[in-house]
Length: 326
Ligand SMILES: NC(=O)C1=CN([C@@H]2O[C@H](COP(=O)(O)OP(=O)(O)OC[C@H]3O[C@@H](n4cnc5c(N)ncnc54)[C@H](OP(=O)(O)O)[C@@H]3O)[C@@H](O)[C@H]2O)C=CC1
Ligand SMILES: O=C(O)[C@@H]1CCC=N1
Image 1 (tube, helix red, strand yellow):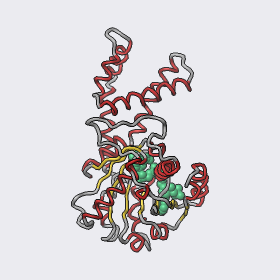
Image 2 (cartoon, protein in one colour):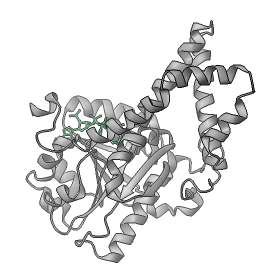
Image 3 (cartoon, rainbow, N blue to C red):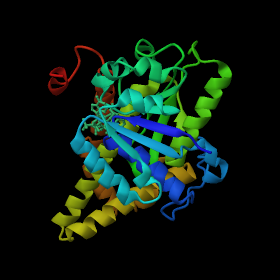
Image 4 (cartoon, rainbow, N blue to C red):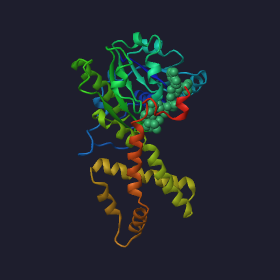
């Protein structure tokens, strides 16, 4: 049968999530890129393959809400190009409450500072009564949202990342046990639905909400950090005479391979590094240069600083200048 999913604030992340889910519905192979995805040992809970995700646990109708007509035109083109159910996604500007009222589940994907205004707009209380609302907003806590939605609205927080678009996402989910407003049987059902949606477009796991800012920095922001490393690897290759396109291919496939080895074998990254570093060879020469540049602490500190910043998002008085104008 399926149900209707409404994305409020369908920008980069809304598109990534919808594109991933539409792709799953179009070609339900658990390995969309022809790559194996065997369960890791000790690193993460096994990812349910689609064989374990019943069809009815995924939405079959979609609404994408934005604020500008320009965005409607752009999104329609984007979704048409997806094929499958993509062209059937309804794209609407300026009608959040109506769209939410006609949906079964709502995913809030607007900017953190817009959440209160959008959730408390006229008509929203009625639209959200008894519904599951999933928020992917950085920094906005479940307890903050609890103050903006009706008591009957069930809340789950999610922190996905952009690779959801190609079904290689990492999503952390949280639903505090202390959510007094949600009866236990509904909470279990909501968790199942969230797991189905987000594990169909990558990996998904529940973690306590106290870890959310760190998850936001590590896996939410992580694709940007990884791409800086990827670009730097390619630049090094270009410096040594490789053509740019080939250098990028080598860098991307090498990062993907190393990451997959870590996930699939459960081996410590240092052990994988050690198998590459031939005594007296070129790898250890490069490794020592990275260590001289304090690359490890620089990367780890980036996660620390991004975590601290994530905790400020959606908190009044801590907005970026552009957000304060609205
Ligand atoms: N980008 C990322 O990698 C990640 C982002 N997040 C979180 O996801 C959220 C969205 O980020 P991102 O997708 O990058 O942001 P975008 O700016 O790409 O998307 C925001 C969307 O909200 C829409 N919007 C603005 N105002 C309204 C309104 N009043 N009603 C309905 N829609 C509206 C915009 O439409 P229009 O252009 O028409 O105004 C736009 O499509 C943020 O809270 C962020 O913290 C979480 C994980 C990763
Ligand atoms: O940079 C940000 O604030 C958002 C949250 C995680 C990724 N992008």
